[in-house]
Length: 140
Image (cartoon, rainbow, N blue to C red):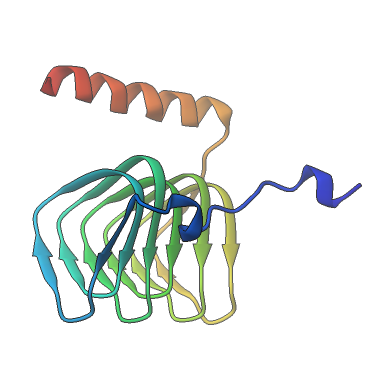
């Protein structure tokens, strides 16, 4: 059937106990690395990286930096490239100034992108994962 082939979307609820929330009045400066879920209602100035998990930017959220995560949901503003290794969802109030890299993408009418769309096929995804692993081994 058509629905049986569909990939499951990640939801913040599936990361109970591993969810970080940045409140609307909060501002964080610096790079972040985590596993689990990250809900951004405030401002983050720096790169965000998750090996496993979800980054969700609410309509009040703002990120200035590169985002790398398997699942990314944007309904706020991002200035920087977004690397969604699995699923990228752009809601109606999404405003992105940067290139998007994705395997699967959903975009709601109203979302705005100023940058290039880059589909990650299996070979591109493997090459990107190898590059991330190499950087991690160099930094250790």
